Image (cartoon, rainbow, N blue to C red; front, side, top):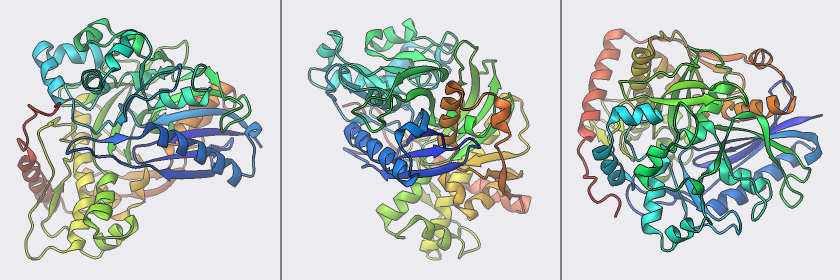
Length: 507
């Protein structure tokens, strides 16, 4: 039997999944990696740990499938976006930990850009908004703060790559031989790529003082082979690496949202709602991002509008690991379902500021509405409900900006296993929420990209036939109750604002 493999490198873990010709996962293995918090608002990962874990999950998945590398026809990559690594392709030297997409240390660099470039001009060039979320300010921080890095960059020794670049380089041989590329979906998150030309933009490179030679080559998401796995790596079979999609675009692809107006919401570490807008560039006036959905080699790109939430599943992890209210994530659901509502408790998890539609780096998290009545069960329910409230905020902005009425919401990601969350999400949105049979749509999207590139699959229509509904939640909440809950949510959001100054955030 032949398979397509997907290496899914996420914010908290890495996994490898083998898919058969029906798009069904046949074997997988997953490993968490350490979250490094040097100080409040800073988040880092160890790139070497992530690569070591990637090797392990590939090897273990192949063992579970009782397969070998020769049974894998192609490899696709999907990854946490915006997270940036500085390394030397010739030697493999890593200059600093990966600075994660949630990290805020570049806030004052973005403040400087805001003075020099209007929001309209930035949106026109990149499709993005002024925020340290994106890779460019993280690169500048490293250039200004890592001893010797600027000189090494000037000598042409260093590349700044997102996680897809790091994985492809390692898979294709690493030091001295590895391929250094990033696909258009990831490149569109640097704040350095021109959203129309899909090339590194001279104005943005100049604004940040980043030389183009220190960036990967931009390639299509699928339709060409970037390189081949090497004999010394975990995939000893000269297997083509031929599909890359940033994680949220991969989920859109895996949900078979191939035409304009189709959208999905992924509930993972963060929560991300994307709607395909076709070949048309649509710009937002409500805090949404314009991003590349995907591009097939030789064809025009497909675009999307995106709403981004920083903290969703990671809040459940925080309740487990930091508050220690529960010992496992399923216990959060059990406690949440033991009470009829949140007991007046609202959690706004602005751990890294607020993302869409607010984009406030000065915000910090709050637990509001506490009374003596509140219990750990109410805290757990409020933690789950916070994700649904945040998704509601971006859903409303999405409908207004895209002029598209969304009648059902396709959902995926680990948090869709939470029945109370999905029920509450349907109640808040007032529309059905639908989960597919294959919930790991991020990895599936990367597999689809690689499979289309290698002839494993041939058409979008063929892939669309694989999509099957598994679960559906329909709204049941009284509209007056819903409106009251939204009122208190909005009050809680206001309490998070102006909490910190960004003046010294880069020091």
